[in-house]
Amino acid sequence: MTKVKVKKPLYKKWWVWVLAIFFIGAVANSGETETETAEPFVDEAKESREKLEQLREVDAVIEDGEELVGTDVNEDGQVGDGEATEEVSAEEPVAEPAEVTAPAFENPATKINKDEFMANVKKQAETDFPDDYMTQDFVVEEQDSAYEAMVAIVPTSDAEVRIIENAIADFPNDMMTAKFVYDEQMKAMNN
Image (cartoon, rainbow, N blue to C red; front, side, top):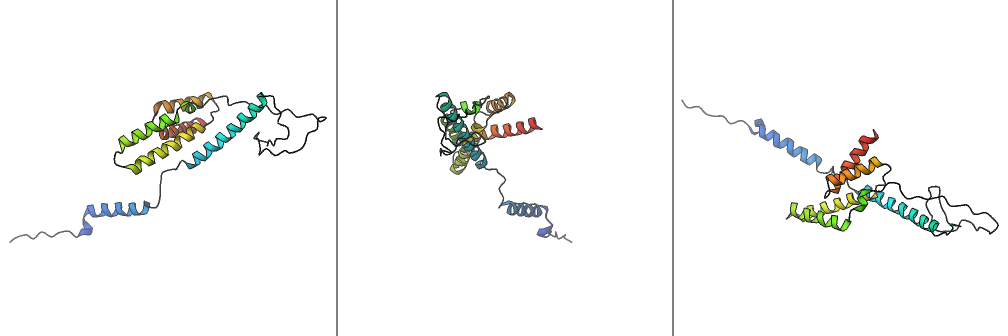
């Protein structure tokens, strides 16, 4: 008598269930992206640069001995759109403008030449992804955004300057990782 080998139904095979779970997970996550874009960092960088430029303009005006008569300066010390708020006569005392000082701590990221940095990033992306131009572009764009975010940081302590220096020293050609390290170190320091 010969034994007849009965095959298991497809739904009882373990590898079918693994594939089904993998497929369901892929479909469920297809609409979601977990990567955080750097757009908020870029906006923050632009705002910081604009504020810094306004402070430099006010500082230059003060150094030149000019007066800020009739210039709209709001409570934050920002120079407004240049519209005169009121006429000041020669008899009325002119209020002295508040002393504006440059940031006490210099951001080490500002010393990095952006053109050289981006050239290195592009070269590395071409090496890492030789036939994948879409990924090359993605890496370059993300690195550029992270660079802008790092440059926009205005350090407020020596410890923060050291954190930036260490992050850049550890990851000189990877500003995304340097930014991540900086963010995590600042969270740990402030807890």
